[in-house]
Image 1: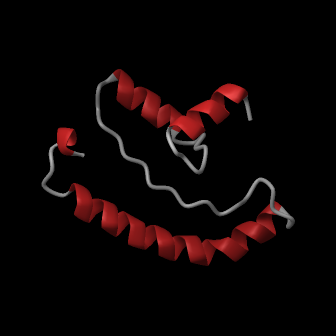
Image 2: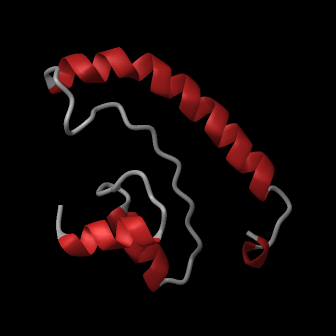
Length: 85
């Protein structure tokens, strides 16, 4: 991880770096469209198991967590203006 990425993650109190959403966020910013991302992490960079095995092991847990989180995000943003978030 670059020192710039690490600084940005620390400054924003982030816990993960999302590479897949970066393009969507970039385009949303270009068009001034608000974007919210909710992501579940199924594989860990520093895990001790092969990626495919770790992915399958974590899939059930993160799917349940993602389902709950998405419901909470929808409840939180429902009826609010972007400026209120």
